Amino acid sequence: MFLSDLENSDVIFLSIYIVVALIPFINSYRQKTSVALAMVLSLLLVMLVRFILAIANVGFNEIELLAMIPVISKNPDFYIVPPLQAIDVDTEYDFKLAQLLMKNKESLSNA
Image (cartoon, rainbow, N blue to C red; front, side, top):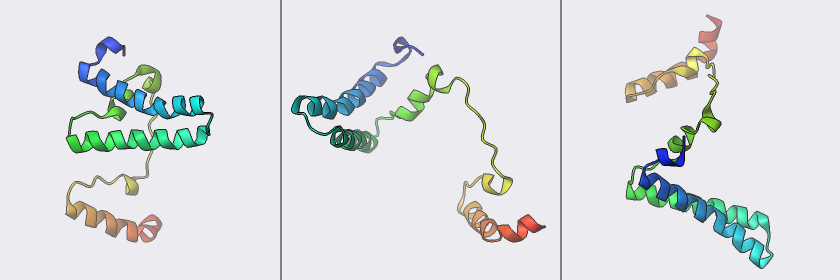
């Protein structure tokens, strides 16, 4: 994936994330303050931007966007999950069934 593969809005939002994440570190370097404080402020500011974008409902999901980069996800491994934990929950009935199965998992595993 190259920068040219992204839409303009993706580039703008990704740039906002990068700038917001770097500002505390630049400020920390200039004022000779703690890098740990800069890290905390950076995380808080990025979460604030995520929250604002979620409320604005702009349809930007940085996790899905970054998962498309081949260097990061060129060979994803499958994680084998036991069948009892892999129950698909789509409705409230499915959720109640999963709760019941998880409550009784010891008796099910002995069967």
